[in-house]
Amino acid sequence: MEIIAVLPAFLAAVVLISVSPGPAMALIVRRAALRGFGASVATVLGLESGLFLWAIAASLGAAALVAASGTAYLVLQIAGASFLAFLGIRAWASAVRSRRAADDGTDTEHGGPGEAGGAAADDRRAAPRFAAAKAFSEGLFVQLANPKAAVFMFAFYPQFIPPGRPVLATTSLLALVQVTVETAIYLSLAAGVARAGAWFRRPAIRRRLEAATGTVLLALAGRMLLTPR
Picture 1 (cartoon, helix red, strand yellow):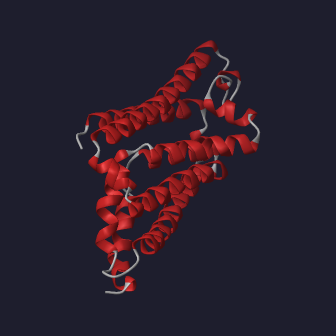
Picture 2: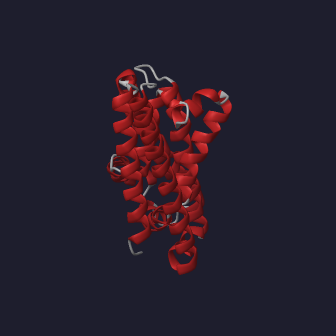
């Protein structure tokens, strides 16, 4: 069976996986809504770089080690849940600071002093390269610290590797296809959200978005930590 024969089924599976709600979508929506489309590109690239690395790890057997080793799985599980919890708490902290600023009358429609302590102001003050590196790192770490990604890659990719095909080369090709499809989907999502960016950045709406994103990330952290292998 040639690789071209399995591509339709692989593409269908990838699209379904990509549109499923999870940490990736939460990060992308928040960044696109509060920082705009350009700022979300680095997040998407970080997420997809992590995905590609896990795919290569699966072909080399590293993902199998994580899937088989209780200790390795637990370490990644705790690291991933902790980072998602950190992002969730940070989003909630930004919402609380903005709420206090609004109560003090220092928050404005276009983002006044009440934003100064929040993540949005931090990104505006940071150098563009630093802000992009930070967004990329967040996406990369969220993906790499997810043990479910390792188990998924170990179980998913072998189904689409035709007998006799070189595992590493075929896995790399399939991973590139998945990265391309997911990047297109996530950037389209970011572009759609960014179009309403001015509305999302209104203080009242921004507070609700930060609170909602923080709640989702904390819930995902809890699910990651408590869900059995």
